[in-house]
Length: 270
Image 1 (cartoon, rainbow, N blue to C red):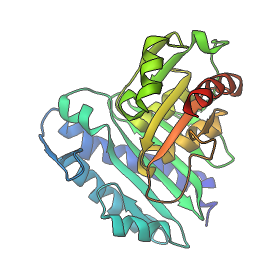
Image 2 (tube, one colour):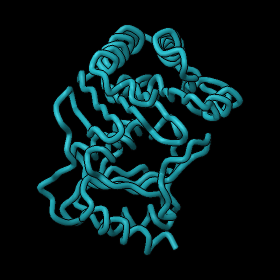
Image 3 (cartoon, rainbow, N blue to C red):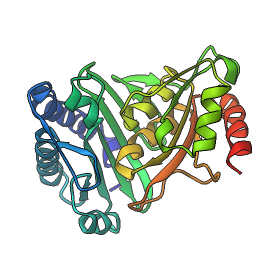
Image 4 (cartoon, rainbow, N blue to C red):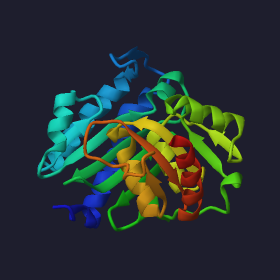
């Protein structure tokens, strides 16, 4: 069952289905809906709930053997889905809700299929730019159906653009990165899934985030990996764990830059 998306028809059905739902349920509501505050302090909009509902219906109707986990599901439902022997979809219906609710056109839909703790399929769709980043385990990554390879003209860390979420970093590390940056410039775009994809595409070359949920990173993680990039946690572990827990991430577009970036950070995280 894990090879079902090796078939072109199934792969195209998945990609086109998610793109259409994103246009209908998310982009059509951009600049037209307000947000409410959830118990954890994050934002929720009508686009989040309607996109999750529509995606769950589409996925379970089309591929009924897989379970479903959405960001807006209950924690009990999320944990149960991840234990499924058949595998489960992991969806972030609007990654970058703060941007979406503020009228900033940088947000995405993130979807992955995880089976026995391995990511089989990853899709991240940016409806504002009509960019679909995608990957299948062992088959490489793509951007709008063209091969996506982790490459950059940057040769060392000092030349790189870093995508860094400062507010989730240890204070001493954040302070040092601000006061004596080892990179050329820094960005924070507000969508974890797009963070990973932009690193895979070389739009930024190094990445650092202190705490992200599985629905935030899982699809982008596979896309970066299949593009040839590298990532670990702050403690040099695999970022991916099939559990509902926050994970840190160090990542880079190429192995050479990753080694330099990781060495710099590890020396300051001890």
